[in-house]
Image (tube, rainbow, N blue to C red):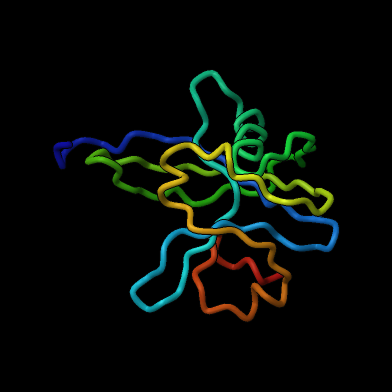
Length: 145
């Protein structure tokens, strides 16, 4: 992609999925040079013709297997950021939602190929786990009230 080209807008959604023990589900992607991991909430891109809420429910289904979810209203919008995939620059614009669920076993069999190749794990985090980790958490500031 030529450097003078504007990034392509990529609307996306993230879901703060919290279980009945007040734990937050996060996924990891690869180990960093310093041995830490990068952790992030469930979610992904909004498909053409899909609302943000529809995308959030689809992403939860694909990434966790969970189908009976009630989303809160939008709780936050992240600051846009850019990434390059296959030589194409995208500007990611994320909207965050909250969903409370009963604890369940995660089923990642619905991962898209890209997710299966990049996501290395998942776990449920308590607030104290989040506050104590040296790993990178997204969105930043998760352990804070």
